[in-house]
Image (cartoon, rainbow over all chains, first blue to last red):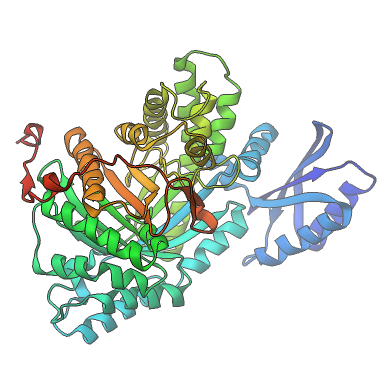
Length: 89
Length: 447
């Protein structure tokens, strides 16, 4: 299944490295990545793919949150379908 | 990857308080009817525990996977006045207690359906249920009660209107805060997921998942971008926003229904405020250009909002239902509270607003010494607005026992606080004491 991971916060050295390292450890393959500065905030959106049959979302959320706290950014992980549901006809 | 759309969706959730206000599982209790109270309540307990055992877990999982907050998990049941009518007892408190017990054990926030539909008259169960309301609500914490006293097809049952004034007063004397669990309706709907008025109508399937979505903050934010522009633009903007909000409800409802193996009922596309900053319907009206809610133009602004929300939401989901529109509960809306406190909004203007919004006088605190007949008078006026205009109206009024105008009553958490509002001091007693039934309006004869 596809996941959208968004990282928003103060720009600093190593955000991409730390987030992608954690995604690799969680067995999430990065399909697409985009980053921009929005109102001075570093904003990165990753599309990831998770091939685990019964993923433990609780664990994934908790681990991403821990990385976010370590580097001082806000990390969200959401299954992709929610964005299609809201934005597409 | 549409990064702009992704970020917009995230902003709606994280900054503008877009949420799934409730996943409500409607459960029919018609197959639990029994002449023996113990057997009936045992059957009710078993059916609730069996039907809703995964409700809280499924809601939690969806929240974790999709990052959309699901604020409440609720259950609505067949009106207990119907379920309990065959049971040999004069007191229905045992039925309220079993609902409360099951709700507590299941971890659902509220259970609705301690209800009676008396728009045309009382059956034996209705009388017993209404008499049991003060004790039932006082001895439970999660049970909600609703009474339908009028409908466009039947007119207004003025005996029930009179009785409900007394019931509300009696309940308030025990504990005014409990009055927020009791609502008096006209034209009550059978698939409403919102409380205190949710019950599972007799025409419904055995079980159904009904969704309530909310996001006043999202609408307000969208309107900030069209400041000063004509109402055509305002209406279009609200429609587009309501569409997106409702899609979220449709999407989550579909997943919840699949995982629970329960048919998906309806999405109720209501703008339900909370006391949280930026989650206010009043602020939407003020964003349209009113100095304060209550100013002349408020009713027109609310009418436009209510209509545009419905139009935007209707195409976004398979089945629309419930109350669908804008709620204007005073204590649950920071903007409403502010307007009442600074004298900009009174009961008369609120009543006018209820003619064009989706419910009625909601979460309104009045002085503790307000006579029961005055409360009945308020109920009669609201019921008349609903019955004549073919819409749902409701009264959820809190007589603040021992308190007077200028003071404030606190309900805690999501329910906020309410400044006590002055009521018209003239008596309605002789009018209310007539009893009987106000006939159905001429436009009820559509056959």
